[in-house]
Length: 325
Length: 257
Image (cartoon, rainbow over all chains, first blue to last red; front, side):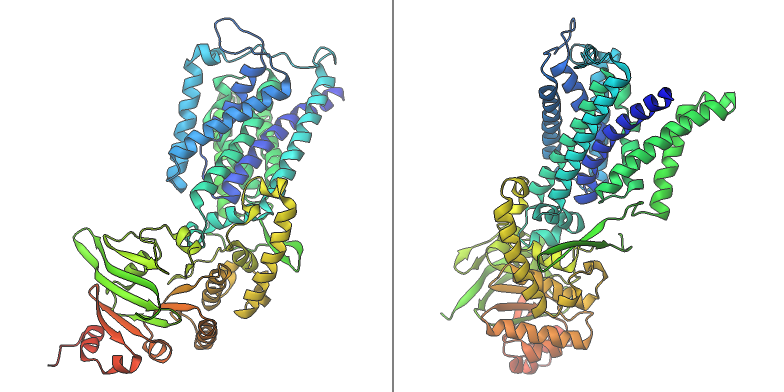
């Protein structure tokens, strides 16, 4: 029984951490129409930077500043934001698939840099040496994991509330207008470049927070954690949950992470030996099927985007039916 | 000189070796409904795009209210008092009609990232004002019953009215309409015309590109005709109907001397 609870806590923690990243992507893609194909770069920047800021000194490596946990996490978010700012400025003129290709390239470059820059990031060995706060005091294990889960859930809720408030404001209205038709938005006096950059950076900072939590949860981050598959998983979560809907983004994260772990378990348990060797590859194929299938049969996702309608000062939401381009 | 609101001097626009607009100089009178006609490829839309900042002129200058606005980006031109609609409507499809309209006003506190959090009081005050005004404008263009519809789901003619409503939110002095009657049913066209004329009586200037000759002849003065990138005619609708050069250019007929 305790095993099941332990596992559920562990599972929920990872799913909730990823849900934060999905929310960040939802701001960029769901609300602004920015096709970020390199989610993992900003997630990774947050993870690495948090461990560098918050970890203990390691021989021959940058970092080990041993900053208090909240500061380290903020530092990780800051680094992710700075990276997004640089990438955003460079790719400001790119749209849609071109932006996706450029950001995908950034993510691959990031992974390679981390794999090879031993002094910066520990190279292929990854970064260790993070002392989990209160880990010893709580005796580690379930007690610690439960506390960590609570912290993650609080942050997830905070990000959710922040984004909900943001997208119901004129800021969100402007993001959607730019997603729908940049030329028309310009003709109405809006500056799309500025707002796209703001959205890109804000979403990436949120991804950086997710990465920082991920890295400190495991007290370890390595290039294996920032492979492109994570970008695809996060995208699958958003597409299945419903782009443009924050509730969908969170639900998608738990669903896809559940499906991912369940499929891994099922394959290792029931699949013939020859297939088991390829469990990872089979899962890649499955996630591809999920993305393509969803786009074909229910492109709006499980939770449809709600149309923001407001009359006489009262704001209500209403189903936005079909009509997707 | 009479009261000129929009003045074009020597506007030229090349696309590679092709000269789409060739040395066009025009004065648009304040309070007029100027009709811009010409056959396909005459350079009307290119001229429009130069006027609205979508394209930079190869040569020439544009003055709006005595201020040089040549080469200004579309967003700045809108703030300067020049609004436009599109030949093929560009609604924000997955947004409500009301949201489409509420977007347009400039200087919204809540459009900045920190607005909803640090300036929420003034944001809400502004939103109330903007919503009231949006409802007023939607009512004016008769779209109020559709306020909560997704803008992508209303009819093409209603989209043209929506574009007009969006532009009106910016309180522009000059409104450029690109083929407002194209693909719109006669009832809605009539409604659109009555709204244009009502706004015109309130002092707004219109420049309208239109292929529908009845529309132009009945509602626009003066009429300006372009052919092969040049102004070939300027005058009243009555004069236009009698002008042999215009008939030639517009109908592509052989000139009768």
